[in-house]
Image 1 (cartoon, rainbow, N blue to C red):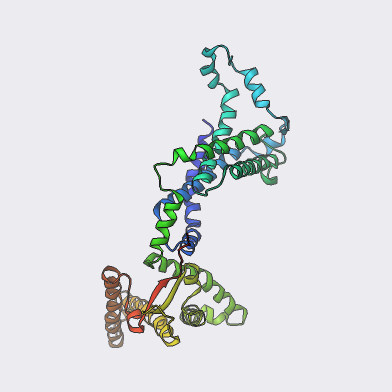
Image 2 (image 1 turned 90 degrees about the vertical axis):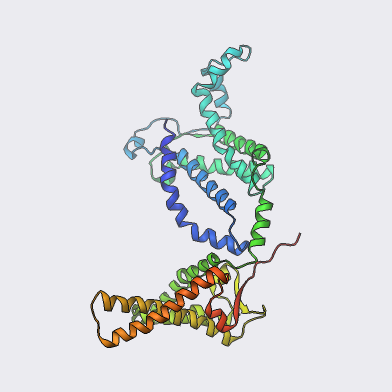
Amino acid sequence: MSFLIPIKSAIITFPILAIFILLPFLVIQYHRYGSIVAWRAVVVYTFIFYMLSAYFLIILPLPSIQAVAKLTTQRYNLVPFMALREFIATTVFNPIHPGTWLPALKQPGFIQPFFNIVLTIPFGVYLRYYFKQPIVKIVFYGFCLSLFFELTQLSGLYGIYPRPYRLFDVDDLILNTFGALVGGVIAPFLVKAFPSRDQMDKKSYDRGQKVSLLRRIIAFIADYVIVGTLVEIGMSLVGLASLADNPYLSYFISTLIIFILIPVFTHGQTIGKKLVKIRIVKRSGTPAKTGQLILRQFLLFEIAIPTLWGFNYMFVQVFSKMHQSQANMILLGVLSVAALFVVLNFLWGMIFKNGYFFYDVWAKTTQISDVKKPRK
């Protein structure tokens, strides 16, 4: 049961890979469709898991470098249909004796070539079902995938090993390509019970006309991960490293650039909002004025968020570090009222206002989706 090792390895590795690609996946989906459809995520992630499993199946288990250095086995086979010759020569199969057919299917001469066909059948299914590729392209991509596998083996896992520890076999190219073809042919029959790609796209575009809270959060994270990092690097490069080391000044400068100045010059979009196709506009849907953009962003990033941080800081000072001076108690009281307002407004806006919070109300702005439905 040597195939269990690659499968177990894929199961262990996949959650880490899934987390690593989650933000790019969400950004791409929101940028293209404006929403996430659960079934699309299932299809994409199962495809990634399949590709990971297939890759591990062709490289694992890994032998030691010393053991590979001592190998004297054949490195490659360029003679086609050797697998067929071995099947005829090494199995009990006899076409005129049906009683030999089933036993022949249990012998290595059949199992290994059959595995190479089965390995790429899902690849063909995914290409036909989700990526909507024609049969000709499925065959071509199947061949390319197989060639990648075989070259991986021929190169000794990209030079890690002094020589190949598995055989580069032209028959594997043929069988893998045939498996992709089989998958492409049977895909329409296998996926009848599932939503089609067109149905997924339509549902995504319909949902994408509204701006969900998750979409806004992804834009916020993208701004901090991408633009925030660039701002920090830029501050260091221009000799402002001391400011970057101060968390308060760093936050003020970063938010000023990312969330106030950039939207002013891009007509209501931060870089993150542009990635997920969100725009800040007037309630009427017309472009927001500069003053409205500045007010909205200032209320959120220079008032609301610092208020929550300030409350947390003063709470720790008063009740953990026991700095219970009269000034600290008064400041904590003021911050408590302000933080309570922010939290309650957030909850109220989430539950009853569809994500419409006080800073949009006071600035008379809203957020709309820039995603356009494709014309039929």
